[in-house]
Image (cartoon, rainbow, N blue to C red; front, top):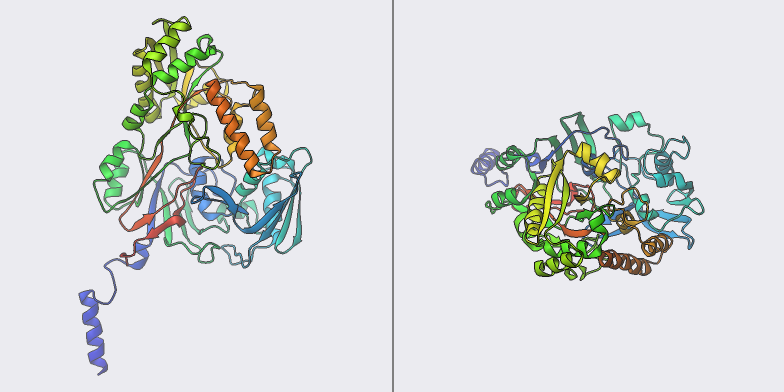
Length: 507
């Protein structure tokens, strides 16, 4: 009888009827994700580059987190928090049974150590962020309660976003340990790192939001271009960021899961106010209304792209002022009239500086050049390398007009602060005392609805003043190999592998 049972089971296995697939289960739940470059550091909060952060964030968790479904900041490792009316003191209550990757229970002492580390509160050597210089103290009330005190006069309502950025790590762990074997509380834990080649992570089963479906992920350095597309088709990689051309190619395969969304970055045409013609609002308006933005979107952008009317993407729907995108519609006839009123009849010429490595921006510059030629404006496109663009254009503002894809953040204050008088990233050298006052007011306002009103008012003013020509959020699209579905995008650098699910018919 035993021999018969064994024989039947073997027959089922050979016929594939025993619930087994041709692949090993660990292969079905493993992903290879291409990245552009290696990292300067794999320790949390140490490497500032977006290319590092989008990977390293998989290993880390903070007191707060950004929820991609509601597109708002919500409690993370903390189950709740309160803030005093003056904004000086935040009190966080930790969730129950929180674990680090090494199995240690997370306590208030770990939170205290983590904030002291990044702020340099004890060492005098901060790791990240100027705001940390304003941290006064971190107090452990009990194992699950921590109080974070900001220096009087330094507090801002946007401090909560800075607090959310801090990765919570075990009390006492050294920088040397973090560089070799980082330990956090995120959805994935460290396995292996080969500098310049790859980093391998595995799912953390005790992750407070639940163990991820993808059990192992290898972030591997791959050159961009046609080779990546071929590697994706061959199954060598399982994740592929798309542009318009690669999207057309990849979507031919109906088994491939493609995720498209807004990106929260803003494509801006900056018109430098130090260039005399751009000091005239009629000229700025004429340039805006002479550009067929919908033509650019249809020709270059991804499926979820959106035309904009100010420096805010509808990705942050809570703060976004809708309707401004219709204020200056494509109208070449009106554009020509405005130019003539301002004294420019086929005699306006300017140089448009772009980043030579950015294909999208250079293609967009050609669209703009064509459109403005129709109203008698000559545009000389000047592509320069990022290494030159950064110090000359972005920092010193040496340009007449410039294109830039400006990175987005979940914090609306950080987005709109670019228009504060004298601010280092105020590329258009825009100045409006009312905007300065509103930004200052928002930084001291802790009522969410009041803050929303203020930020929407700022967007109205930027649109009315034509502080820049706001073109679009060009969107993002990502392809996943046929074994996977899901994936959620964020308004900052983060490839969230924990949001990816295994297809139910994959065994």
